[in-house]
Figure 1 (cartoon, rainbow, N blue to C red):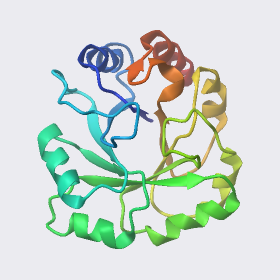
Figure 2 (figure 1 turned 135 degrees about the vertical axis):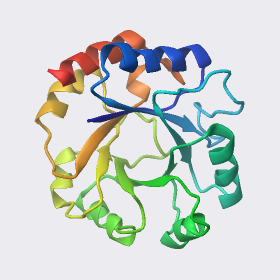
Figure 3 (figure 1 turned 90 degrees about the vertical axis):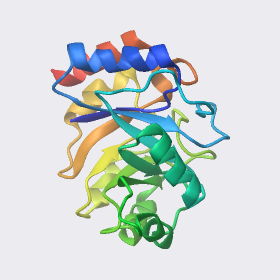
Amino acid sequence: MIIKVCGMREAENIRAVEQLFTIHYSPFTAWMGFIFWPKSSRYVSEHPSYLPTHCKRVGVFVDAYIQEVQQKVAEFGLDYIQLHGHESPDYIRQLRADGSSPAIIKAISISSHNDIATYKDYEGIVDYFLFDTKAQLPGGNGQQFDWSVLADYNGNTPFLLSGGIGPDDAERIQVFSHPKCIGIDLNSRFELAPAFKDINKLKEFIKKVRI
């Protein structure tokens, strides 16, 4: 299972989350998300003094200029690009045009069965989907959607489950099943403050999920 801890920014907190996986929970594949959207309370405005070396780095963008995305890929050594806005299939094709783009994750905002079909516009164009809760602002809202609507997802692209997953959801994660679900995305409900994760909460949650 992939566990993506998103909304990271502080160097020592980054190091602590990374150590949580390398020391205690190495069987999990760990991704770490960095948000490059200025309106987010978790916006990474400066280069942290430490970046993970054992966790994959994911850059999160919301309707950013392609040149800006490419700049952050180079500056932060990103392994994945997560597009969390209204980026079109043509935008993604342009991003991939020179063949140097990392793998791309397209976030799909969900509130009902009707929203699932959005994935069809991106099937075969992106590497992963991330199904998140539709809210006023993209990502990090702590709100959940009804996971049962994902039974309507019949695509071939693997996805991560997101949207308000919290410390009390370990059992729900264990029983959730979909052939294309490869991991989960954790953010606001594991924080002491925006962009600062509670290591103990993460540790206890991952321990329960692992059982």
